Image 1 (cartoon, rainbow, N blue to C red):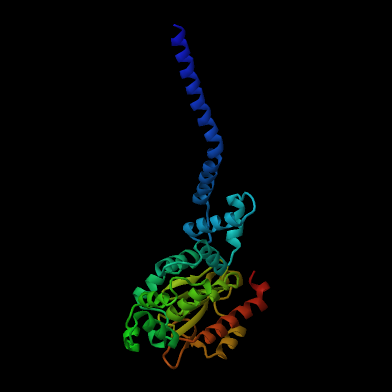
Image 2 (cartoon, rainbow, N blue to C red):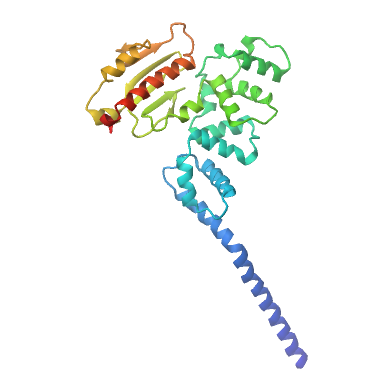
Amino acid sequence: MFKWLKKKKKKSMTMMTVLSLFILGACTVGPGGVEAKSWKHELKQAEDLKYSEEVTNGLYKQLRKKAEGPLPFSDALVKIQSLSKVEAMDLYLDRNNKKVRPSEIRAIVDGVFGIDLEAVSELGVGKQTSTYSDDVLQRVREALEEQVSDEAIIDMAKVEVMDLYWETYNGRMTGEEMRTMINAIFGINLSGISGLEGTGVALFSKNQWISRYEHDLFVVHTGADDVDVWIYPTDYYKNQTGMEEIPQELETSLTALGFGYSEEKDALYYANPKGESVPDNFKGKTMGTVIGFIKMNDEDFR
């Protein structure tokens, strides 16, 4: 009987030990798990995210890695929402030392800027392929390791050109190099687009909204091949001012750049007389003119 009691006591002690270890484990591992579940739940519940859920997730992990102490998700989200799109792109790329494949770059551009490069390529819109720079043509030939003709490269889908261009960097590109590549191939200036936030100018290009915010005042709308562009006021502008047309002062400034009123578009319109994609310097002058006017008259619109 004594042996039986001894065995029973030993068994009870073993069960107590297991239970203690279980409780200890819950105390040491549990908070991390609860914390992870908590911020992921907060992410799912968050509204009006500036960036995609996947990108926001990656940005939070990056900020938490850089933080010296605990970083609540709510605090990090404030920081994430305040990042410019270029800053967000570069921070997100830091998580793998900018080693990303072309398909991943396109996904990042979609998640940060809301621009679908795959759709641009499939539709064949954007920068005219006939205006590819010598650098683009040279890099494609370098990747192919043969002297293909300009015409053969021009006939390629833009994503294919992008994939070949990327190969010449041996798998590692900085954010700035990626943005240069995308502008050279697609005619999409991501750095310029990032700077549009808060300016009051919306941009519709490549058959999709490239940049748009609730309080934008004017829309800059480009044609499929960037050969032409037209500008018109937003509904927000009309509601704020009670005016239907672009102000005379702004129209005069844009007319000096070559714009004129188009009855068909019901907007100020410009088409490149050479029939080629509008160059970046003209885009910059156009945007600068509209943004400059808004800054000078900001009080009238708010």
